[in-house]
Structure formats: C-alpha cells, structure tokens
Length: 453
Ligand code: PFF
Image: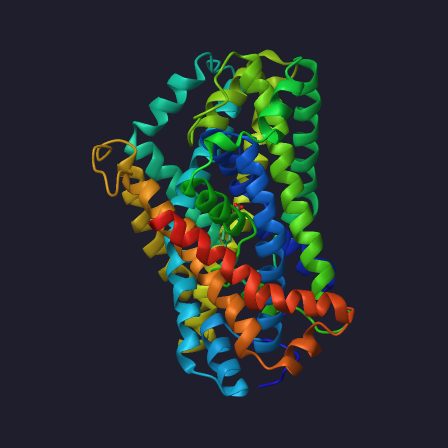
C-alpha cells in the first residue's frame, strides 16, 4: 500500500491533527477524573507523581504511538502485523493491538455513562433557564440521578449515538468545528472559574492542596492511580494516538513538536480544572479529600447557583464538557472501527462503528446498574463500574504502553525511527530512544508490580 496515505482518509492539515489529538486527550479525564483522583489520593503528592509520569512516560510514548501509526498507516492490529514483518520480529506484537481494542471498548462503556451525566446536568440548567427548580442541594440532585437507572440509560444511549454518528461519517467531518471553536471556549470558561476561585479567598489553600506534596499519604496504589491517570488523560496505551497518527501527513509535521503541544495543552487543562474546582469546594466548606466521582457534580453547582449569570454558566460548562467528552469518545471508538473496516471492507464503516458502540453501550449498562440496583456487588473491593475503570485504565493502558515502548525501543528498526523523527536533534533522539528502551518500561513495570504485591 501507498506509504503516504491511509485508506481511512487523512487529516487535511497538521493543525487538524493537533486539534483531533488534543480533542482526544482533553475530556472527562481532565475535568471530571483528574480533580477527583487528586482529591481521593491526598492532593499534591499525587499531582507531582502524575506530572512525572506525563513527562517521563506519557510524552515519549505519545511520540512513539504517533510515529508507529504514521509509519504503518493502517489500524493498530494490522500496523503491528506489518511493522513486525518489516523489522523481522515476532508477529505476537499484534497482541498490543488487541489489548487496545478491548481496553477501548471497556473505557467507552463507562465513559459514555459519565458523559451522560454531563448531558443530564446541561439539561437541568436548560430547565432552570425555562423557569424550573434551582439545584439547591447538589448532593441530593446527584444522588437522585445515580439512583435512577432509566434516566442514566437514556443519557448514556444518547451520548453513544452522538459518538457513533461522527465515527460513522468518518472522523474528520464535524470534528473540526467542535475542536476549533468549542474547546477554546471550554478553556476560557475554566479560566473564568479560576478567576472566580480567586474571589472566594480560598485560592491559596486550594493551590497548597494541589501542589504541596504530603508524602505520608502515598502508597503503591497512589503511584498506580497516577500512572493510570497519565495514560488515560493522554489517550495512551490503547493505540488511539497511533490510529490518529496513521492519518497524519508526512510532510512538514514534526512528531516531537505535535506531541509536546498535545501534552502541554492536556496538562494545562487538568491543572486549570483543579484550580477552578478546589477553591469552590473549600469555600463551601467541603472536605477537599475523598470527593469521589461525584466531585464536580456536587461542588460546581453550588457556585453556579450563587454567582451572577450562574445558570447560563452552568449550562455552558456542562454543555462544553459534553463536547470535550464527545471528541474523546470518538477517538475511543475509532481504532476498533478502523480494524473492522479493514477486515470486512470499506462499505461497512457505519455498521462497524455501530457494532462496536452497541457492544460498549451494553457493557455500559453494567456501570449504570452498579450505581443503583447492583451497588452491593463488589469485585476486588470495588463496585462494577470502578472495577472496569481499574482494569482498563490502571492495568490495561499502562501494560499496553509498556509494550508499545518496548516495541518502539527494541523491535522497530532504527532507520524507521530516524526517518519518522528526522527533525529531532541527535541528543534528543538518543534520549527519547533510551526512555523507550529502559526508563519508561522500567517505571511502568515497577508501578504495576508494586501495586500488585
Ligand atoms: N483522554 C480522554 C480524557 O482525558 O477524557 C479519555 C481517553 C480517550 C482515553 C481516548 C483513552 C483514549 F484512547
């Protein structure tokens, strides 16, 4: 096959790729998950470990995924098949592609449920604007939502349909506008919330919680959570960035630079979200520790009910958060869809997307039920949704990332690497290569082993 294009289409420009990759990275992981993981893991020490993981493991693996994708030009499974043959190594590396597909389906299942919560909240603010009741007790409002399986299923289904619609049409159409205009809007809104946070008088305390590490609260589990979060937030370890890389033009695009741009944007959004949320949490007298998955839903509405234009603000915030989740969920669906298209022919893109999304939707029902009727069911001391999240985010993504690093570091031919990273100064190239060969795999391995034993 032609080495310069992919049968699934190509990004129209470098900017389009950056937008799509940033759209994939920035999502619920930054604004919903990062703050509550920080809250549950004791604050600053978690944030510091997380930042270390982004720098030493996340960013280099991000570059590896993009370059493997851009060289292979097909879906992950077939890319590994092709590259392994080319470099004369075992074809068992294909397993990475399979791990990715399974992780993607699992993540999409609960991701869509949580994205459904944000749609529900946007709708609550629409109702309020139309004269409906105010959210006076956000804790009770959130609990009522979780207690209602039908309501949860409805929003979960709606979100999944929105996701399929984009993937079925081909990723580029529709994505551009969403990312180019709506993501900056979300960024702006977060900044405004940070400014609001400054007016509460609790910014100093919030910043201390976020950035002053208390190493006494750190355990093996904290490292695992920080590592899992780093992979999750950068969409790594399940070949998503690889799939997007497959549609990236070769000319004039520096993988190092786009990787840095994506990682920087993603990290800034997460930190901004933290700086926006914790002053509000503290100013309403809520304990910043142990907020759990409901954190943003039970804290932010308190501020929206009291600040000027808060209802419009609430609508914009949850609406844009749903859009951010949308540009991520399509990237969760794309690798498996691309694989099915290659396996069964181009005509079936719609059916492929629908099939995978249908499966994910069904699995998502387990998460829905674990929030209410089946809340008593525990696996390894976790409810079903948290268990799925744990297996996929904390175990499968780092494992996938570990194998990707080893593949890029040891299996792939050096000429291919150099060709893909041709603009990189030799020192940086060597550093990157040793990060792939030794540092990143060792760190992931230590974290995984420490957490298990
Ligand atoms: N990075 C997304 C977020 O932070 O919300 C979630 C995600 C998307 C994870 C795509 C993995 C993935 F492949």
